[in-house]
Image (tube, rainbow, N blue to C red; front, side, top):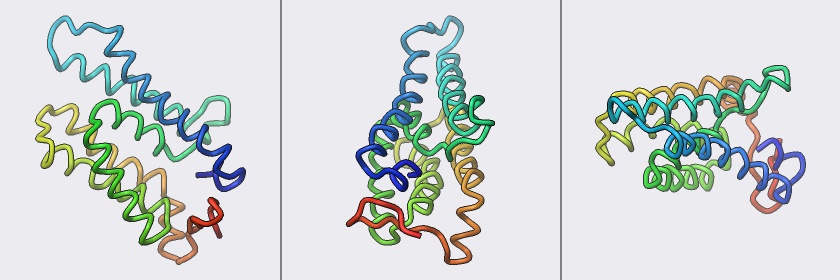
Length: 169
């Protein structure tokens, strides 16, 4: 949202798509290049490691003094790669929260919060590494949004202005 806020949708959408698909691609690298020799769960570990590294590189970029984004777009790419159907359920939730609150941070944290419930109870995920990943996502996104949470509690969080395609203060 920072790029959209500063430069508008024309610049923000390509940046958003790049952030999403770099993590999606990282997860798919494991599918294309690593053949699990010992167990099917080994493949899952590769997914988590490569997707996790893409997200950590987004949040803590080496070349920007370890100060990056919130990790939402990269995590969207990981979720799209691992659970395409769950992505759409969470996207609907995100859109509903955005329509009613116009608050990107609240919609992002809400989507992260419901993710474990969606993959476990809606899609029946039983593999422990992926359940742990889902819970980690639900905890990691609020962690990266600590300042946003303070602003939400103070009533000073920025709202998205749909008419101007920018974030308002």
